[in-house]
Image (cartoon, rainbow, N blue to C red):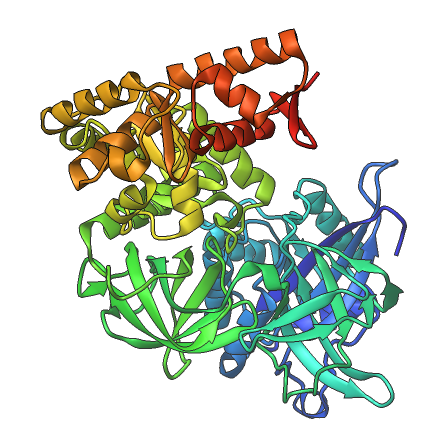
Length: 636
């Protein structure tokens, strides 16, 4: 493998006995048919693998390192074929010149289209067996019309004479030169297509790595079982590597696992951060215009995703069936869990696995029956189906549908990178469509509704209890419990709320314009308290004498909360004005006479020991005075 090379995955496709395996061997020198039965029957039954390095068509550019997946063409093994083309960058579509376009050629081409493969090179094999290669090529070109491969190069080849092999290599390199590199979105997934055990080494799994990198020594999780294992070693293209990246055939040594017992074909090797496998998936389905029969609501089918093959029931959202050429939203109720991302493509085949029925793209990997056929749900799915490659559409639809979500968890199970999601969030916030609130993202309409409800509750509390500083936080939490069930979500909401027209006061929230005032029922008690405290400013009665009943106690709490009165200790309350005057008199006395005793200061105020002692202790705490044995001095 050349340093700095570009990695791509190429898969063969085509009808049985059209020479796919022989062509791979001619290109790479590797015979992809590895099973004894394949040798004896002369057909590929399972996936075969080889690798090839090609120079870039333009000098000075890094070479291409291709992982080649050879798939079976026989109709009995189409399920194995689908497992090999789930994550490819380029299709090598093989058509024998003497047979021409055949049923499995058609099915393979449709599967490639369903899976979003848009680039192909056509190898017209066995060219030495046809009398007119131009006619053979023209017939193939006709079949490619109205497909993504209409402009694909067609290269006549013969593995017997060696004709066209170098031209095929050149065509592959030319197409790959314009092919984007497999994206690294920091979400690695390795759909397992082979599992075996080596003596002294342990379990080996292989697959085509997509979405990110895996490192030697890294801990991975096997989905859908959730078992964890550590990667002891990694091989890519038959070489030991420290890191394997997207677009490479990758083999992992996972000695913590038992081969076949803990991991098998169809599992996915990934990281623990990306959530749980799915049981119900909402998707957009599409039937080919050439489909032989409709897909009916309630059909039991086989879903092929990556290397996974799982049975499911199809529940159509709109109609009782999808006809040829139609597309529409559907819910797939899987009979076994499968690890899928939003944006993943998959194939639907009939239960007997005789026919490919449809292709699909995952719109929501964590759907549920509860909202099935709900109007809002349909709008959500239709929005996503319009732009399945657009992160901004996916983020916007997710936030609108859920109302609020944790930003760090947003679309984790999707084919969008963290950077793409973050950029989409920032753009939507700038447009005013969402509101950022700590680690949470609110739909702007939902945010306005919550703010309105909170504001109404606070205003109502101000009207009913004008003497209080504001609505207690606990009461607001109870009011918004349904919409904001998590404590940190509620706290984030309150933090943002107080940046608007509200302020937090201790354990309460009030409008900035609210000024606490005694209600009419408490005004008489207020006047009496003020008069009593003013009558003896430095020797007020005890708290029990001052407020002996509930009404006067409530009124006194209001005076303390608003700062009009000061709680010296549990039994002593003075007006704020009296505390200020007493403090200044004490300062003045000590300045003129030096450190003073409690008795001297009591006499200076005309107070009592019941008052002066707790008052001096408070001034000590407030760093006004400093106790020196039995005297008080001023702090510097």
